[in-house]
Length: 47
Image 1: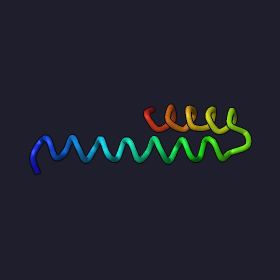
Image 2: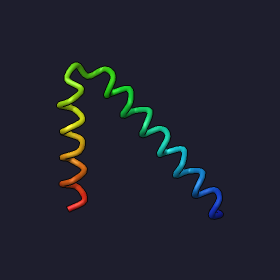
Image 3: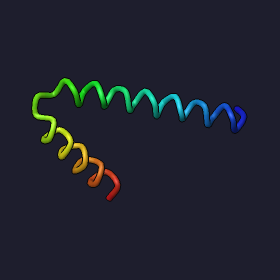
């Protein structure tokens, strides 16, 4: 796999994940709680 192909694959995965998170965000009634939980989850994931 060439470097360009790998970059394109990661870009497509990034766009898909952003779209999925946006759909979840706009369908959840408590948007503020969802966003806080996501930030907390990512903070714990990186530690």
